Image (tube, rainbow, N blue to C red; front, side, top):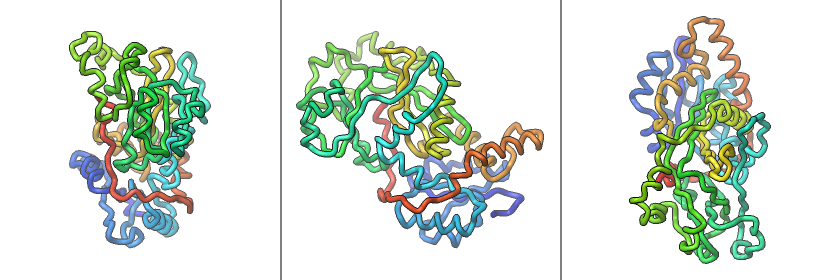
Amino acid sequence: MADDMRGVVGYALLPKKQQSFIQDSLLSLCKSRGIDLVRIDQDRRLIDQGPFDCVLHKMYGDDWRKQLEEFQIQNPNSTIIDSPVSIQRLHNRISMLQAVSELKIESGADTFGIPKQIVIYDKETLFDRQSWEFLKYPVIAKPLIADGSAKSHKMALVFNHEGLNKLKPPIVLQEFVNHGGVIFKVYVVGEFVKCVKRKSLPDVSEEKLKSLEGSLSFSQISNLTSDERNDDKYYKLMDLEETELPPQSFITDIARGLRRGLKLNLFNFDVIRDARIGNRYLVIDINYFPGYAKMPGYETVLTDFFCDVVGKKSLGEEKEKGGDEKLQVVRNCDVDLTKIASKTCCSDGEEKEKSPVLQV
C-alpha cells in the first residue's frame, strides 16, 4: 500500500485514452484531495513499480493480464479497476447485452429490455432468411466482436436482402427501433450515475423504407435525411431540448444492477426510447471505460470515486462516521473486482476510441 497520508492511483492507458482522460484539471483536483495519479511505465514490469493503492487500466492482452495477476498476489490490499475477466464480457455483443436480460428490477410503469437480435456466423445462415425471419428490415449489422478496434466499429443499416452482400460474418443482426433520433448515454462511475442526451440515427418510416435499397454504413447515415433537411418536422424530432430524460430512479436501478452483474465500476450504456411504446426503453450497447471527459463535471466525479477506493473522504463528507459508512458500502460492492481470474484472452493491439457514429 502507498503512504497513508496520500492515496496513489497508478494508471495504465494507451496514449489516446491517456490524453483524453488524464487532464490537468483532473490531476489538480485529485492532488488537492490527497490523491496522486501516477502513470504506469509500460516498458517496465508492473510489479516493479508503485506502491499503488489502486491500479486503473484499459489495457488488454495475455501479458498485461499476467502482470495484473502477479501484482495482485504481491499487493493483496490494492484494488484493480477493473477485472480483465469482467471487461472481457463487453467484447462480445451477445454476452454484453445478456447482462441486461438477467436483471431483476421492479420498474413500475416503465419497462426495459434489449432489441431482438441474432448472431450470424456464416454466409449461408446470413442469406437464409428463414433463419432470422423474426427480424424485419431495416436491421443494424454489427461485428460480433466489440474490442475497440477499427473493425469492431464498422456498422451498417441494412434495408433489404441486397444489403446483405457487403456483410462479413461473424456479425450480429439487431432490429432497428425508431426512437425519435435521440439516444441516452448513461455514465457509471462506481455508485455515481449520470444520464445525458445525444443525437442519434433518424427514424425510418415505412414509406421511406420502400424507397431505400441495399445498406448504409453509419458514417453515411446523414445521406438518409439529405432530402429532409429543410423539413421543420425533422428538426423538431432532433431537438434535444424537448426530449424528456428517462426517470432518474429507473435508470439508476438499471445502472446499479448492471454494475453488480458485470462486476465493473467504469462503464456506460446506451439506451433508446421505443417510439412505438413511450415507456419502453432498450439498452443497445455497453462500453467499458468510455470517454468520461465528455461528461459534465467528470473531474469531481472521478476524484470522488478515487477517494472512495483508496479510503479518502469524499466531497461533502464532513462527519467521519458518515464517510466510513459510505466507504464500507463501496468496498463491499468492489470486493470481487480485486480478484483477477486466470482465464481471459483478448489482444486488440492499439486502442481506438469509438467514433460518434450514432450522432448524426
